[in-house]
Amino acid sequence: AQTVTQSQPEMSVQEAETVTLSCTYDTSESDYYLFWYKQPPSRQMILVIRQEAYKQQNATENRFSVNFQKAAKSFSLKISDSQLGDAAMYFCASPWDYGGSQGNLIFGKGTKLSVKP
Amino acid sequence: NAGVTQTPKFRILKIGQSMTLQCTQDMNHNYMYWYRQDPGMGLKLIYYSVGAGITDKGEVPNGYNVSRSTTEDFPLRLELAAPSQTSVYFCASSRDQGYEQYFGPGTRLTVT
Image (tube, rainbow over all chains, first blue to last red; front, side, top):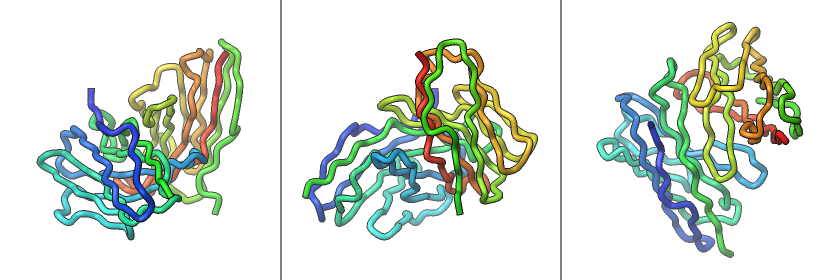
């Protein structure tokens, strides 16, 4: 079965420090999109960052950036200058290969990030 | 803008009962999705739609049905509820494949 693997169930970071969350995936698509979503205790799913696989350049959004290694099928998320509001579950998502649309996603089990003041 | 709205927010069902989870989006998105999230897990795709009148199965469709008669609405029907359907259900929409999916606030469903 197709999987997205987030190998760190829980991570902790000191406020203002940097943390990296890992993700590997196994799509057979050649052109696709990858996503990191954040889920705070409110349960709302919020997009953090999106990467287009055909682009060599790693995506960045303010304090959030990715390290995208297409050949290794690796897609890690780096959070710089961590803030208390970054505390949440983080989910990595890649294309689901078995649907009729490239828009369908498969999600990892998530990494719970705690931020210490 | 309301974005994606879901009703109800919470529901308790008895085994064997049926119900419909409502989902509406006001962004004129063609693509809509239903996911379930079990405790400690990521989201799993139940059904999706690429436009009005077109629906298809996701990873975990058994026990559910959907319809898409308008661009805005994408209800999810549970027939003969079972304890295994206890979960949080999210509806989402996107402008096109590969674009950000906007999520509703979720419905927490308990089947006892």
